[in-house]
Image (cartoon, rainbow, N blue to C red; front, side, top):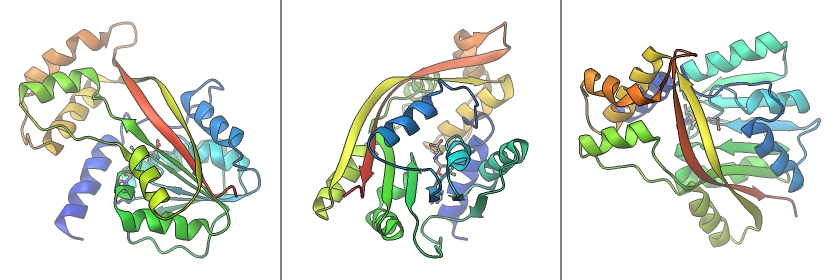
Length: 255
Ligand SMILES: C[S@@+](CC[C@H](N)C(=O)[O-])C[C@H]1O[C@@H](n2cnc3c(N)ncnc32)[C@H](O)[C@@H]1O
């Protein structure tokens, strides 16, 4: 494996603990996103679905509860392990997990629905084209940032270390690419706030990992702890971080 790929894998492996995972609440953010896709005409029921960059399974399991089968691909074994554990708890046997970089993934045929949420490698054009290839005559659900905002404690630390922020506009990028290929799509925009809760250890590791990814290899752990302090909720013994989001849900392939 080349060193860039190994770095990417390590970054996502470190993010796995504390990453949003299956949550049975009916009023969850991910339920509202799946409902939006269905309102736009996507049908998951009884379908063969591919989940690209499935992460720790926040959507994968909900989709598997409706679909005939799900192939869930991710570069991070730690992410897949969390999703696998949660699917075992639910007794779901229709998910096939594939540890692979999207670029190396060799699909066996096409899928009725390809689902791809917040998966960074799809910013490359060949990766986008591969999504369309595997959709065949089915549909693609693509979720990307309209605009990315740093979670607050991280923003403070990024400014402190004078690091260059990553910018994501994966939603508009995807729409531009589809238009360039003369492919028709529908899309909706959603804005709101995500809330994440991190134990002390996971919160500190999360900040360290994000800062080192931006080029600060050994951030000061005491400074991180001090910056996270206002976000500590004593009743739950966790940091609670609320981040504004602005995303786009794009659907291609509904005719
Ligand atoms: C922001 S998370 C999104 C997870 C999930 N789709 C969701 O919306 O909750 C991005 C996921 O893409 C995966 N990923 C990053 N680069 C990848 C690549 N080149 N090939 C496959 N998966 C990748 C990461 O491991 C991570 O699980």
